[in-house]
Image (cartoon, rainbow over all chains, first blue to last red; front, side, top):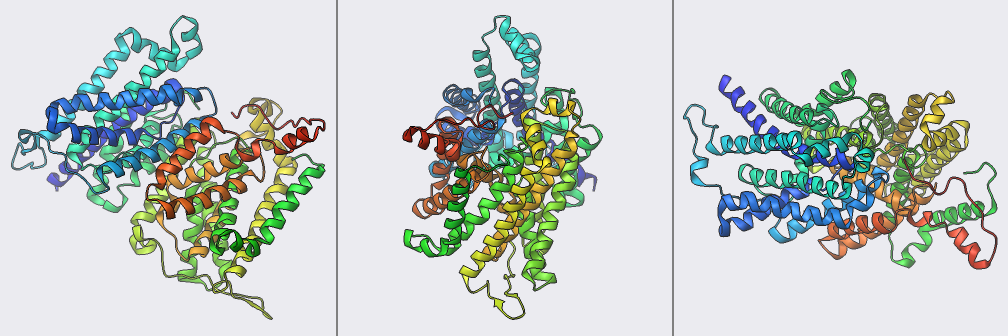
Length: 289
Length: 337
């Protein structure tokens, strides 16, 4: 029983780590630009598929870095050509635009790489179980957690200490003032958007090694990421981190006792949070409410 | 929406109802079929119901498919297990969707804007997962089968809506008329005027003593009841309900119908639904990549055509062509917020 629980908690942590990467990217974009990026899952899937295609040429490690950068570049192009036009307009329009983009992404991915799942091979030394009793602790899982930890740690350090990062955080609270102080808000938002997409791409490569590559893999992670943001508190990145891990573990634990409910339990958590603490666990009152 | 309806409104109203009432006769001539026409009317009601909330209260719900789907499943399950009466099943479906909406609405009514949209999307997915996972009751991924709409007995005459599509169309049209009539009536009442006031300036409405949360909750719940009615009829149309009806992509489709037709107009969503349903039917018969086309339409729509077909204000264009004087309409223009 303990093994089973540990197994599912570790599963939950892994899934939670994907939620975190995905939700942090979504949060960054939502906080600074007020855009709910429905296409985020599409970017994630593209990240995985790019890595799949690139890996034979530049190896797993190359793909791990290059693929998210490519996806971020694509995100930057789309932001510059379309999405930036909708800043400051009713959120309805950016929602519909990214929703349409998500449709296109899914369809294009399906047309190019096929609808059936593709296996994405990771280096051998990462796939071996590390212990015979806890067979589920493979190197890849630890590796994934490490990459996510580095990415998230790097992001928080960047936001805390770099000038650009401080501006992004300031823009979350008051973009007008940031603009008045002479910061190029247009560039800031573009960079921020690309940064968010980079995280999605990274999550896509990692997810490709763990789950298999499917056109809908990103869309399936999108809703839990929303929940992670709401549970953690809209506007708070540490909240998003906490929310992602919490709902991952909660879903993992529920899978032990009542597998059919493991999808729904995160929504119950969201309902409870909204009832007891409407701004989310670490959210601040008044932001985007 | 002015209390005194001007003449052009009568003309619009007349044309719309004439087209709807005679649809079974002209539809086959232009290459349509009865089920397609019925689907247009049903989705039109769904889009108009959501627009009651989105266009006339200014609150963005991106999770209305949940209540649409609950209406469908409620109706289907009632027909399968409880009753042989189509109207009773429909009532049960509407109650299921509407009450679920009212309960959820109470939970989220204080959220606004993007936040409200996100919470509605996420909560909508709960019902999707329930329908998807509860195999024994809902049939899971395969959808709910094993029910049929039943003939309606009027004593002297039995309306066989099952075997005569045209009768089913008129049955749907009757409920559509009741639904849209009720919404039109509500919007012209003091309650509806207050909703418009909230949409235009929530803070001012609050200072005037309007209980904002209560009004938004009522508007949300009413809109859920109407969209559940549309969902129930959709289940009756296909004698089938499947989980994708509750998915957020379905919500997105309903929203795009509204925007396609014109968000600030009462009948716009019906036109948007007609365009969308026909286009989807056509594209999916033409190509397997219809999702790309649909997505492209979304994108182009938002970028170049955000006010929709009726948002273009045809009457004024028509009038200016004829050289008549322009009329300003207060509820047109301005940003949504």
